[in-house]
Image 1 (cartoon, rainbow, N blue to C red):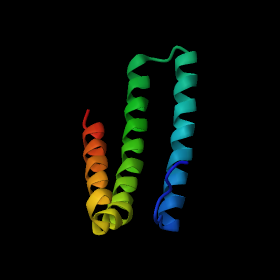
Image 2 (image 1 turned 30 degrees about the vertical axis):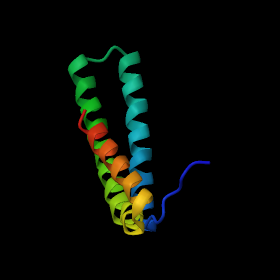
Image 3 (image 1 turned 60 degrees about the vertical axis):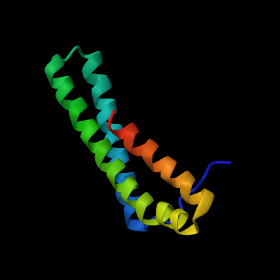
Image 4 (image 1 turned 90 degrees about the vertical axis):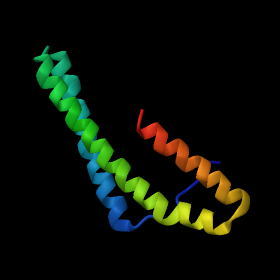
Length: 97
């Protein structure tokens, strides 16, 4: 069974969903650009835009994770805290590759 967030502020969830829907549209636009043999530099510019939009969503999610999920796990102590430390290290290093 997948884990669920301990707490997500409704306005944060709404903002992230709006951003993700916009990103979805940008990716469909990229597909059309490739299908239409658009200029490579123009496609690369749009790819950068999508990557930055995804980074913004990731930052919001990381902040929420630290504020709620991680804080609660660390306060619990012992194995739950250690598991959270490992998870955070994995998340941080996965984002810097």
